[in-house]
Every structure is written in structure tokens, then in C-alpha cells.
Length: 296
Image 1 (cartoon, helix red, strand yellow):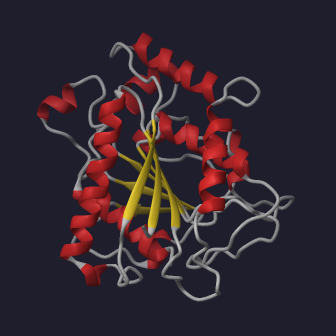
Image 2 (tube, rainbow, N blue to C red):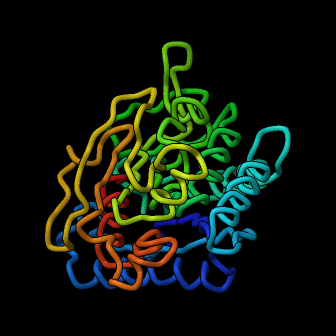
């Protein structure tokens, strides 16, 4: 195993469906890597991914009341002092981070026994991950190489990348709810060393139509991040034959416009959630692979 993924699903996802979706994404990534090995510099020595799927009760009626119910459940499960989801996930992430062989020891580009840790979420699953990463940050831990952000002594927990598809959260969530994911004037380090990448699509009705009515504003999955404590970069979701340059992804926070591809069919666009779950496609695996390659 070279790359370990922790995947947290979103709204309206039954436990078996969560496993199938994570397996499908990793299967697409393996196929892409095998078919186009030269397209991912850094993965020449191999790409053997494995996923840990975190499942939670996310089903409800496809209605405004159902959306609010799951939104309130996600908040109750992840709110500090109230819910246990961040605590459980933080322990899982801390365990995985401590148990994996450190790819930066010795200090070369990659140890053949090293394992890189990536976080992938969908919808409300992105909220859980953000809370968990904040909780998981503690006093000591491993190094990684690859991204331009320097390693900060005293920050043990390190995720090599974090990718959230169609996040169900207000556009100012990173300013209000998750500021400690990033360094600041009074906080030199951050537990997320690699970039935080978020996709959005105007065809996402769950974080557009429903989020607008439930929250009074469109969500990140529909319109991207609004304000954040760090500068943002904006990019497009690329086709599998287009290589991501480092300048497109090597930033603290990257908004990826996936509207061209995350559209769904005609029936999907008219469905209550629209294209909210239309991310299990080769272009998403291409983005995952690119992040894994640049983590080296």
C-alpha cells in the first residue's frame, strides 16, 4: 500500500453505497494510473491505494425538511462538546497517521515503505473531516515531503491532501467554523499540510436550491468558498488527458469548478439533489491521482 484514503460520505448515502462509491473512485484511479503512468510524476514507483470508509446515518426524505434534518444531525454529530464524530474520526486519523510508515524518513523524496494519507469527503462528510482534522492536531508527529508549505515543528498530525466533493456547508465555513485548518499570525502551524481542494457545480441542487432555502445562502458545493482565512485559488476540473500543473493545486485552499462535468443527466438535473453526487467519474479520479503524485 502506498496511499491510504479516509473517505466520508454525504447526504442520502446508504452504508453499502458509501463502500461502492469509494471503491469505484479508487478503481478508476488505479485504471488511470495503469493506462497513463507517465502522466503522474511521483507515482513511477507504483500506486497501491487503500480506503477506510467512514459511514454514518445520512438518509432522509428528499425535501427541505429532510435536508434540514440531516444538516442538524451532521451539526449535532460534529459540534465540539456535543457530538462524538470528530472525536472518533480524530482518533482514527491519529492512529493511521502514527501507524503508517513515514515516507519522509529518511529524508528522501519517498521511502518505498512510506504511506501517504489523503482525506476525501462528499457533502456533509466534508464537515466531519474538517472538524476531525482540527481535533486530531496534537503535539508531535511525522514529516511529509512534496508541498511547498514547510513542515512546522510541534504539529504531529499531517494529512498530505484533502479533497471534498460538493461540500454541504456555508460559503464562510472556513472563516467561522474551521479556521485552525490553516496557519495564522498566532498559529504558525496547521494539521493539514497539503492543499484543501473543493469542487463546486452550479448543477448541484442539494447545495444550491435546498441549501439556499435551509441556510439562506447557497453552499460551497454550488458556488465555491466565499471567504476564508487564507488566499484562495480557482481552477477547473480537467479532463484525464490534461495534466494539472503544480501552480494549480499547490495552495492552501483551491476551488475547482466542476460545472462542465458534474451535470448529471436530464433526469438527475431535475432530481431533488441535482448533480450533487455526480462525482464518481474518471475526472475526479484524475484529480485524486494528481494530488497523490504532488504529495511526493
